[in-house]
Image (cartoon, rainbow over all chains, first blue to last red; front, side, top):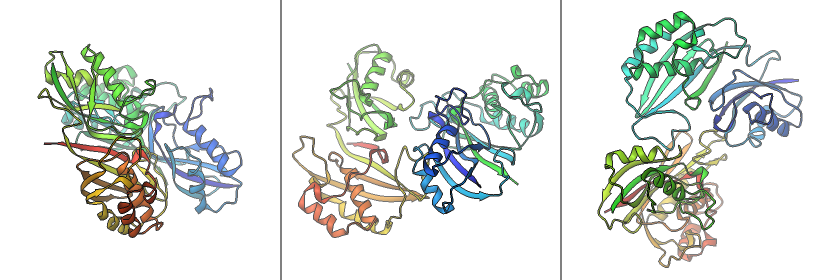
Amino acid sequence: MRNIKATIEYDGTNYHGFQTQLNKKLPTIQGKLESCLMRALMEPIKITGAGRTDAGVHAEGQVINFKINNNIPLERLPMVINGQLPNDIAIKVLEEVRPDFHAQYDARGKYYIYRIYNNRIPSAFHSRFSYYIPYKLDMEKIREGSRLFVGTHNFKGFSASGTNVKNFVRTIHSLDIVSNENIWEFHIQGNGFLYKMVRVIIGTLVELGKGRRDEDSIKEALNNKDRTFAGKTAPPQGLCLKKVFYS
Amino acid sequence: MRNIKATIEYDGTNYHGFQTQLNKKLPTIQGKLESCLMRALMEPIKITGAGRTDAGVHAEGQVINFKINNNIPLERLPMVINGQLPNDIAIKVLEEVRPDFHAQYDARGKYYIYRIYNNRIPSAFHSRFSYYIPYKLDMEKIREGSRLFVGTHNFKGFSASGTNVKNFVRTIHSLDIVSNENIWEFHIQGNGFLYKMVRVIIGTLVELGKGRRDEDSIKEALNNKDRTFAGKTAPPQGLCLKKVFYS
């Protein structure tokens, strides 16, 4: 058995998230990858993803691994697999790794980008890949508020329930905001992220930028560890898994 | 009656072209705009477009005009209309114009961009807005060949049949190629374009870049005015109507 690590990208718009659902009829990234890999390699394939992106969330650098028996040369694999994949999923890089490499358990950190399109006039092209906000945001306030999240915190108040996680302490290494015309990109790197954590952080910062809350309310939400103190979950299409880090 | 000129953008992926079809069940940009304008303004609206983009073709600067009886202030119109439009169509600019302004007949020129994504590895994000070519293209040859189209020519050999056009002479003012990483953009400006003309020109240049034809064959196709001498029609998703010029 060969263990293959792959870096992939996808436009998540037409998928019900990364992970295959119990109701298998809904299209997922995992389901589509596994069926295409099976067609390409002519053996059943089970993939493991570094993280389970939600419905509508995109990835520029998701990492997966899977075992194959096929002896096909590594350099031919990307073309063979991409030839089977739909246009909205692509294998970017493939490598053969040690047998015990595990895309999820070996991940040491993740890098997400959240995009906001902030303009009075909407855009037909950005709507698919950003959170459209027509009203004026106070970006200076958002920039200042964003610093509160950097560092090691208990992020229980900034995550959605629905997982078995017991430890809610995570470290955000950096949260940088980059603007380009009307696009605001939030670049967030950390050692791990709870369920919907990035989207709750963004939703909370947007409320700060709208003047609907102040910095103290964010400190309070971090201290209280209670989801009701944080802001609304920002919509999925603005989120993109940019990179997964391994040691 | 007020005559309104609007600059619009759309992601053409999910539409069967700009113009409403005889079979009205297929979604078109025009059909969607007219139904949304009717909902927004509460009167039946008939729009005129500067050009009829094909199924799958995009626009960043299509121009339309339409007559309204509604007295709504002009500055409120974009928000009212965009509130009704789907995410893949947006009104960018609106102005009230003289009663006889006609988006199609008054157009003095058009500016198209055709995008090619040229990389061994496909992209999940560019596939929607570009022509994916995995093999190596000789871009120097394409650059040289592209100069043959600039100027005034009879483009009959570079257009598809299916229109009532009698005069096939058009002037291409400029055809510039701009590259950014693996994206090649063909910026084409002219006084008018025949049916599928940009896509046939691009398809012919791609064949030149692949080494499947030489410059002489392009000169021949221009001289012979026969579609069979030109290359294949490049796919629609690479094409975008960037701007329409008025005097």
